[in-house]
Length: 110
Image 1 (tube, rainbow, N blue to C red):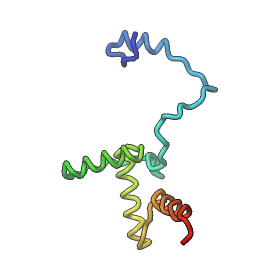
Image 2 (image 1 turned 30 degrees about the vertical axis):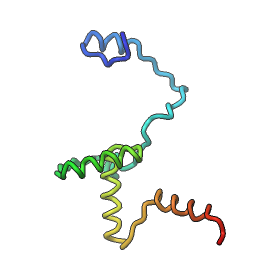
Image 3 (image 1 turned 90 degrees about the vertical axis):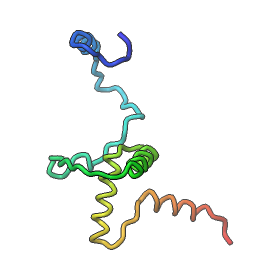
């Protein structure tokens, strides 16, 4: 059998027999990061359907890809930041703030 996913029940049975669990094996570094927003506080995710333009969808895809997260994670982050801004008056993305601080820290003195 190749590295392809099994397509039939028989192929799946063969594949399942070959799977081995190694509890001490290192976790692969290329796994996506865990995002607590995946599991709401009450443990029950709620689905919402929204519609937007193709251009907005492409921008979301590109931004999520650049950040190394899924589009769903990006949308959840943006909604959380927007809701927080409603209560605090201002929200600054931590990654953006750290990048800005790093550039200021490395500027030569005038």
